[in-house]
Length: 334
Image 1 (cartoon, helix red, strand yellow):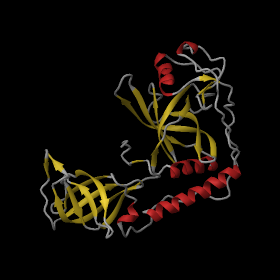
Image 2: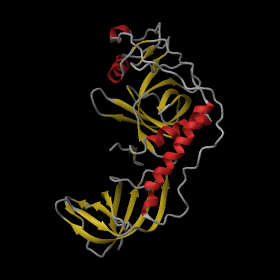
Image 3: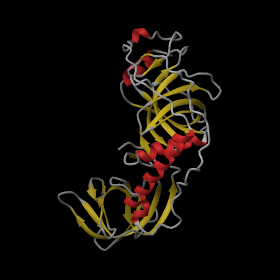
Image 4: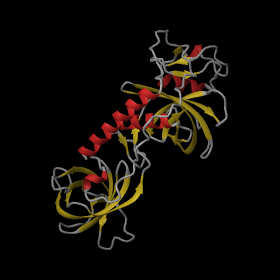
């Protein structure tokens, strides 16, 4: 796994170099203007000037208006608004880099556990192989590897009690890795109840790919300007990025910005090392969820379908640089 991550990091560095030479970086300088107050941004009135975050990142264009108090409260809760004159149109030129993005597809054969890209804490399901057909998977987590590729997992429970398994028994597991979901078989070497219940399992065998991810998803936190509808002009509001992959975003907003299948326009800046890239793209809403809380938020999963080749590579560089902070296939933050 170390070799794989080292290779990925090297590839990311090469891609960053190519993008830096192919596109002009969008400069951003911190703004020293006095922070705004909610009273400075009346609801429903077009802004006479653009609004930026404390680092100069554009939040709202001149002429945009806040829909309601909830949107204004969201803006001040997650950002530090102030007046600014950042040029929102400075999205980088779409020059095509010389090298094409490398494929994220895993190898055709997966001979060992190291090829699964499993991370400590990865979610897993376990059940006895005997009579496994139709039996439920019991949740557990990966907690370690041995040099011989044996694996350590937490002891699964059902109804408050450890499930009935014995050393020497074969078990079937489903593992949610950062790049795919796999099924494999292990033999139980040992069961320990204290100080923490865990299992020692043999090197995985009969590895099968159940589902492949298009790309890994990592945590993120930066402003995302949005416009309602793919053909809308300008950006009407700002949301907060929660996660990012090479092809999409998860964002939090003060209200549901649309229904599944509807489109938005989004704009955001990605900073990764010396690379500073402005992304502007259309996006398809793939899921919408309502979060409990005070005040409640809406979380949207977006697929970006209007990226240029340069923007796609900038997204991949950003994700590669943060792959130690992966959000798993389930989409649940850990």
